[in-house]
Length: 137
Figure (cartoon, rainbow, N blue to C red):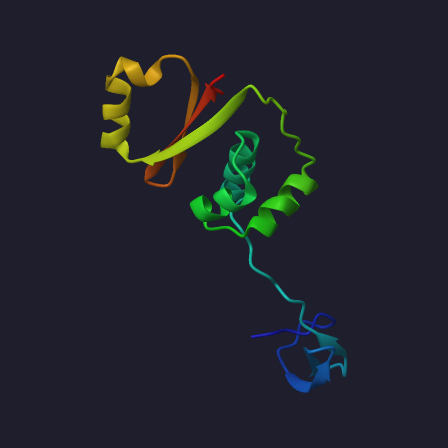
């Protein structure tokens, strides 16, 4: 239920449409108003994860597929928070999404952990492992 922003009364009626937005009139104080669009709020967790993944070298589209958030939103957050990737052409990131058991199995083999840097980050009930390896010469 909407309330009048002027007098907080709930005695309001529809009073036309302006710029594709519903207009209302308060019957108590005769005030005309429109209700602001609330928009979809995205949890700050996803913003933080998207920016982390971007800094780790993932593309906007990869982040979109992993988190289920529009790549355009990710681009806007990168611009908003003025995030810059470090350009290092000697390494390339690869990533895997693993559950708890798969993660344990991966780290149990010492061959998987040699010759590269790694980071593991939580994604809901799964984990993303990002690994940097040198380009083969």
